[in-house]
Length: 166
Image 1 (cartoon, rainbow, N blue to C red):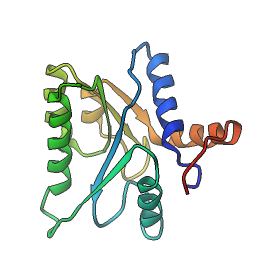
Image 2: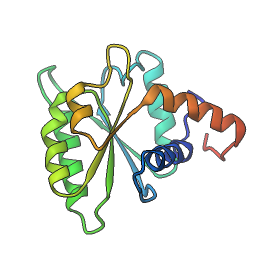
Image 3: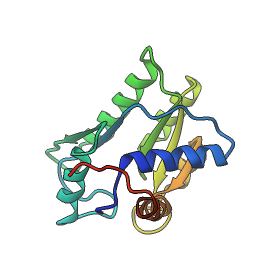
Image 4: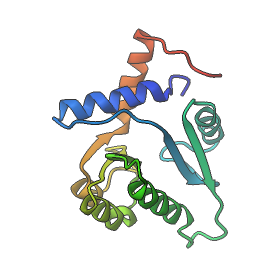
């Protein structure tokens, strides 16, 4: 968890995209949208506030915690969908949107973004309860295993320390 660093993560994304033969522009910002409650992927309990705090202190990262009143509400999904559509329609259109998700509710949004020329890279864990969904993988421009990225990020930060905020 202490090794989490978005400059390194962004560099790993770029390297993976290049390896896959895909050109990518530098990441200009990161928006992290999650529910105000519950777990974030495999992170729960005491790890959850730790990862949220770490993300909030990363330069260029905006954290949006969406409150929800019932389990049936789709506030986070809707918020993410609106942000993706807004970014895709902005004057400075992103070429890629990186979505950390395992929810098939995003499949129609990914299709719509692809039709509009915005590629969606799906990131998630390839194993476990929060594993990448086949529908998301099939619709995405590229899918990446977050477990592998975190391991690579830890190795990278050990080899090339990047100034990190506390």
